[in-house]
Image (cartoon, rainbow, N blue to C red; front, side, top):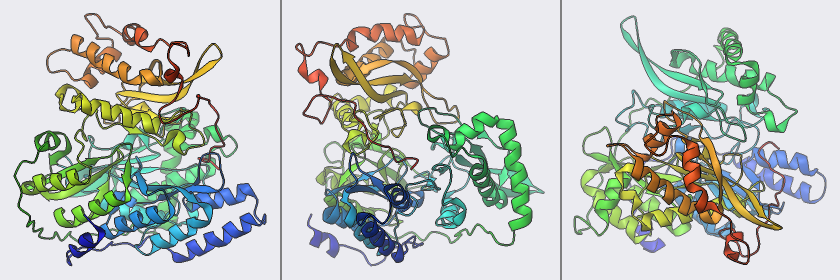
Length: 601
């Protein structure tokens, strides 16, 4: 569909963004700072810190290009904003965008002198890149199905938006020891509250016969070279105490965090080194001080206006079940708690989406979503909510036309992969491309239709730093390099059994797997599982049974799995298989050269 026909089909009853996150003067300041940097009047380190604070991350091995991370609070984005991102990606980037695991949009390989132009364009639709990178509070996340989740107690979205409104550009968090992440989720099943610096799950209690909204709060979780699961702060934190608690945690971290050792300056290390009980006591005492001294000047401003849903009118006639629709429906759509409506998940290959596809997504949101917008998800995906059940076949048909109708969104076939060597300075392997290869192979084999694999996950990082969240995957991989004689080849360290739900745990290291053996290894694990499974058991539950020491009959431990996989991962010589020594997406021989990371610059 052409741009013209899309614009002509826009209804006039669309909701507009409630909050303008932008400040136009920041784009002007960025342009000025680039000139000073190019003139040598600002040193590289000072400019890097400034650049990151404004959401521009350095691209692999060069100062001349940036990745711009667009902050999307709670993942909520409107059609006109999506179209602006499409326009900017064509004008200043590589013609596509990337959806991250933290609900942001990213534009890669933007010339440094063009960053301010992208920022200026974002201001036109109320978006910002401010504090999407750097040592500050990053994008405040919220479950993409919050408000429509059948299992939620209440919708945490207004709280996530209010927290963002309070924290964005707040002097309190402009120079923290390291980046800081806050994650609201709708329920125990759908979110990652236990692997964030602050994770929050809605909770209610009865107080004097009245229901009181509040949260279960978890502190000190996070993924990286060393990962930790968060600790539960207290049985119940009222919504009146929510902002005081967030401020207190940030203040404690700002005051006590390690600013000397870049490798150990995330808050999770502080919690680990102090011990949970000591850290917990410090936070609770700090909260009492904040409540007593700042209660007049701070307030969590909630937007409590009820959502007005549009009447969506679908006029086009078509067969009720287009080709491939039943498979897509089974793996990409779920009923929401409101009768008659469904949630549709759009799975992307490693989060990549073209400018034209973005325009079509914006138009689909206008046409099919009664709330007139989308949410970015936690799995490099896009979520359409408030879709009438009877409109799902037509929505699928539109996705099919755009090449966006891949099934498997809610199954193991939807693979997460970080940007890897496509743009990251620290990456050792092309995890981005490997994730695409795994997804394509799984869909080819129709593994997305296997209910035994539905609740399992595969996540891939290009290095140990966990940007691909490999440590909370059923099967996780992080990149590295191997050697046979003098010849190097790309490989991954594989872990099993990670999860982020109420039974959150980090995956256990199993073995090293050469890159070109990752797909055969996963398929072999599935074969072993099928031969060992008990009735009604899924791959995820089987792996955890093995980890818990209840395996059998032939596979009793991870070591047994490792022994069965050894023949699959044997490295041939370069003369036997030259392609084995080349990473996906690369033409030349593999090397482990990296640049300077900017996660803690």
